[in-house]
Image (cartoon, rainbow, N blue to C red; front, top):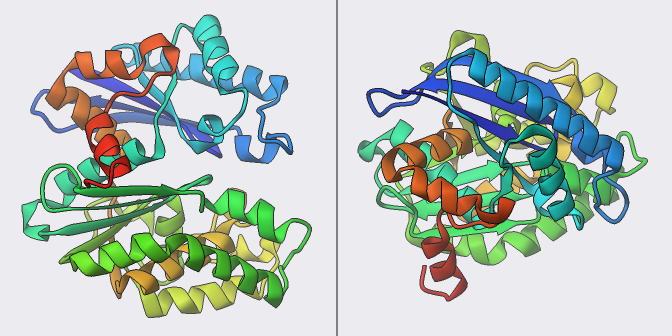
Length: 335
């Protein structure tokens, strides 16, 4: 069985086509379209009409590519940049009308659950009680669990692009005071979540997302060209050194550092502040960089629970139901 997933993120629209005959999503083709939506949103967070048009073209191209590779209609979802937009419903309905693709948004807590599922399957049961950190452009997802799905999830407005706009707008490099103010906010937002992770005492901590991958590379981890099966870790002490190094440089010079791509150079410092603070407050000294994340989690959930789950998730073009039981337990204080 050949499947595909489309992930509309803050910077990029990504397509992954996989073979899933043996229950493991093995990639056969990947493609991406750089839109940088987070840089185009209006001051109140709305996505401009021109950007919606660009998004439709990218999603349409992804669907055509998926069909060319023999895949089903893609499982398509958008993360925080669309989820938080006040014109979210108009965006999703326009994409559906223009492309035929049922793009949906997922609550941040559901993103955390699906990312945890991908990480658990990659790491295996030997990892034991598992903590997860995922830094996106608009939000930070945190999860902890002992089984297939997490016992605790949280989504916080601590995305690297969001915080860069809020604290470093017009500063390149930012002032020491701005960095201190950012760290203060991150500590405040993370206090309760980090206390929960610290109390759980995970055996293994993993980090996903391009932000963590690039920070690990900057700290000396193997480059991505060596493939996903090379072990990569990021120590908190090394991350602190990366943070200081990034803070001293303007964005143009950061992009010359190992692992720091030009499109993410501006937000790399904010990502480092969030990552280091999350690890420090949670009592985590080292994280393993996990190559599987939300896209693999979506595919695994679809493979394991069937198409009915995704139909419910995309109901009315924007309803979210994929992992509501966990999200509702967390909201009720039962997670």
